[in-house]
Amino acid sequence: MLSGSTLAAAVAAFRGGEAALAEFGLEVGRPVLPMLASSAPDIEAAMAKAVKEGPVAIDAKLDGIRIQAHRRGDEILLVTRSLDDITARLPEVVEVVRNLPGGDLVLDGEALMLGPDNRPRPFQETASRTAQSTGAAVVPYFFDLLHLDGRDLLDSPGTERMAALDAPVPETHRVRRLVTDDVTAAAEFVAETLASGHEGVIVKDPEAAYGAGRRGSAWVKVKPVHTLDLVVLAVERGSGRRTGLLSNIHLGARDPDTGGFVMLGKTFKGMTDAMLARQTERFTQLMTEDTGWVVHVRPEQVVEIAIDGVQRSTRYPGGVALRFARVVRYRDDKRPDEADTLADVLALKTRVKHSSQVCNSPLHFA
Image (cartoon, rainbow, N blue to C red; front, side, top):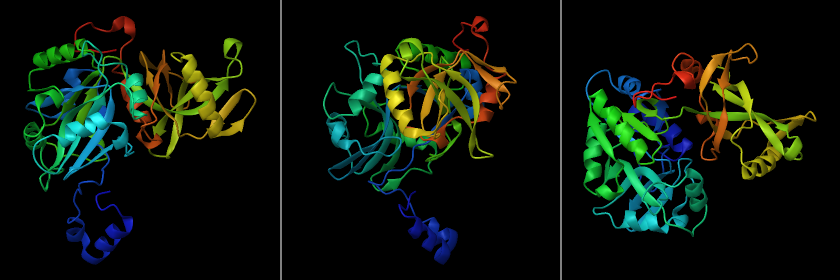
């Protein structure tokens, strides 16, 4: 990833071994995959997962488009989490990055639309806007710095990257952050973040390096409604007002041991008319088999699913089923190999409570 060439990396490994490979670093203008977060059911669990002891950094989790911004001289490059070039679509973000003080840099952050009250607009509006070059402005907020003035920071601890970020990026374009080891203070920060209209928080180990393209316990996300990123395995033909459309989707979690997917249930809840029309076209393109009622598809489409919990089930091969699963959004920015695993789902079975049992304290989320 850092070399930009499998051949170059292979030649270096063959000729110079580890020492030669260590020479490859982050090149401004060559995007790297973003660091990803695992999940926890509440802030206390997230803090314990991120660090064994000591303070954590807690960032507001913005429901926008993940962006990586590169600046080399006067040249600006903006890419998404899937490394798609969207520079031409976000001229307002380009100007923000261009006007930051200092020299070359690489930033990690989010871009989102705000309403007149400065509260975030729904993700679908931001996604729609960033798919084109005109429309309401989006605002960038950055939370990590990977390169600054010729110095790579990928392997530097989070504390060093956070301090370096504060120099070129003004507070108006930084993600809100709290560093603490106090669970009560952390819970208050979560409550304030949710009240501001954001979707949750990311708890971070301040000493961790930036794991480009990796998901681990160094970053842990907490959301008020638990969601899973699953893969669509099949879809059923609709009936009634949905006749002629592909409706009920079959959901699968990733099984790293087999490289396949394990079905966990079905749902059509939460789908809008626009979603139904869009998925009918999409899954017709992905179809591998049509039994007349069920259309089997290539497992390529990731969908974000909100759930009330997980329960034991003999109906599905994974031994569990999702409670009250409903569609939040399709995640075209995620690949199938980034979907949640069966182990992630099984771990929820003992942690996620039924909605009637959820504590109203900010420490607990359904």
